Image 1 (cartoon, rainbow, N blue to C red):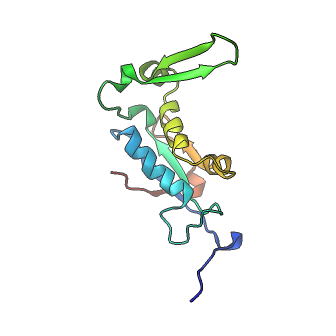
Image 2: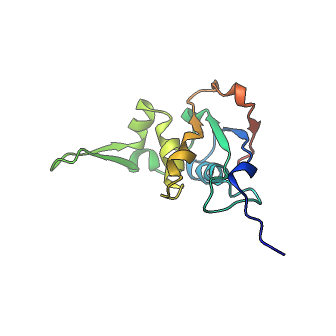
Length: 143
């Protein structure tokens, strides 16, 4: 028997919707990253982008465990000496409610030539409304 290797024409993409309300950020991010990469499919191939699209709604109601709201820090660096800016997760959540979920998922995608293509299929919204009705997303169960 020969090993099946899918071609670009064999790849079929579907869209999923995930409700992040009350979910832990890390557990949500691992499952979404798995679907975005296509590792949940039997036709997964590391050298091809076989993943699906994911819409995450209610990212403003996501949960961080322990003291992470105050202790977790996000860093920005301008490139100039002494210009490292730090922001806590709590302030970042107030400023940009989708940022925490987006960066958690992006950090779980490997840094290959497909990372930007994969992240284009990730749509994160703070509320329950989204603009991907045309893709007819199916609900994805996340524990």
